[in-house]
Structure formats: structure tokens, C-alpha cells
Image (cartoon, rainbow, N blue to C red; front, side, top):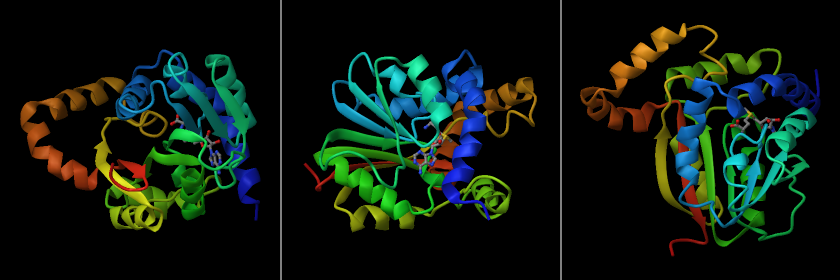
Length: 246
Ligand SMILES: C[S@@+](CC[C@H](N)C(=O)[O-])C[C@H]1O[C@@H](n2cnc3c(N)ncnc32)[C@H](O)[C@@H]1O
């Protein structure tokens, strides 16, 4: 059996070029994904000392490094090469999210998107993020929702395929993780984009995808869908403050 680190590093080293093209280039579907996540960061990151775990090709840091002190950590050296090119102002370090090479309480904001799902010891990764976060600092993470059928399939079926560890969680598990650490939840919300381009784009023609997106955006569907989506959407974001309400 391949070692977890080697397997996942190889997998993401191989994906780095495609990732960079999709999420830092001129790709319509990539932009949709990035915009949805950026909107959760915008209220917190500008002017703050901020750390991202699993920064990939600087998908998000590049949008803030003019206005904030951005540090990105990733396992994959190829991802970091792309990151450095697309975001020369940010600071990047190759490290494991389960063992962060930073002092306690160094950052105002720590976030991680689309990465925790690949880390076997979620609790350890969250403990590390918590450790390097200042008191009253803000933690922003996302998770794959196991209540979503696609989330269930990805975690239960794809998990056992050749390459990459994938985990889906329940909201209750995430809440328990937050209360284990002293993390006061400020917000829990779905992140909705119609296509996760790294997965579905391969299978669905773009005009069909756009058509479905227009229909789902109609006001009727939006209002019918909002409570459903907050429960069943594939990806959910949690925003929490270290040390309780303030
Ligand atoms: C799906 S990509 C997401 C990249 C970026 N956050 C985005 O949303 O575009 C996951 C990233 O996490 C990195 N990664 C996976 N496990 C990691 C770990 N244990 N420590 C640090 N980085 C890790 C991978 O190398 C990859 O760049």
C-alpha cells in the first residue's frame, strides 16, 4: 500500500497544471467556484495576517495579497510552483496541514477550502489551525456534506479508488470539532456553484450546464431551494471565532 503522503503529493503534483489553468486562468467554471468562496473570505481577510492550508496554485491568496499578509501552505511542490508564479507577493511554504511550521497564535485568519476532505486526521488538522490562530481570530473551513448523494458517493465509493483520500462529514461532526476546540460558530452556510469543474465539467456539455444554472437561478427555485440547499448542498462552509463570542 502506498504511503498517504507520497500518494497524495503525487496526485496533486500531477493535477497542478490543470488546477492552475482552471482556477487561476480564464476559465468560466473555475471563476464561478472561486467567486463563491471568495465572497466568504472578503469580510474577514483584507488587512489581516492570513494563512491558507492547502493553497493549491494560489487560487484564493492571489485575490488578497495586495491588501493582506498572505501565507499559503501546501503539500505539493508543483502546486507551490504555480502559486509562486501567479501570486509573487504571498509567502508559500511546503508543509503538511497536520504539522504546521508556525508559532502559536500567529495569524488573525486561518482558512482552508477543498482540502480538509483529503486529510485523514481532520481533528489534528483543525487543532493545528486553532493553535496558530490568535485569540479572537477567525477560522473558515469547508467540508463535503455526507447528506448530499454526490458527497456520499465521493466519500464511500471514490474513497477506495486508486489515488486520493476523500472524506465527507455530517454537520454534527463539524459542530463537535468546533466545540472540542474553543471555536464559536458564527456562520454555517452552503457554498453553491453549479459545476465543480474539476469533476463534473468532464461529463456535462457546457451549454447544458449553463441552461440548468439559469433555471436554478430563477427566483422560484432559489426560494424553494434555500433551506433544502443549506441542508443538502455538497459543500458547506463554517466560519468560527477562536475563544467564543466577542
Ligand atoms: C483540491 S486542492 C484545493 C486547492 C485550493 N484550496 C483550491 O480550492 O483551489 C487540495 C490541495 O490541498 C493540498 N493538500 C492535501 N493534503 C494536504 C495536507 N495534508 N497538507 C497540506 N496540503 C495538502 C493538495 O496538495 C492540494 O493543493
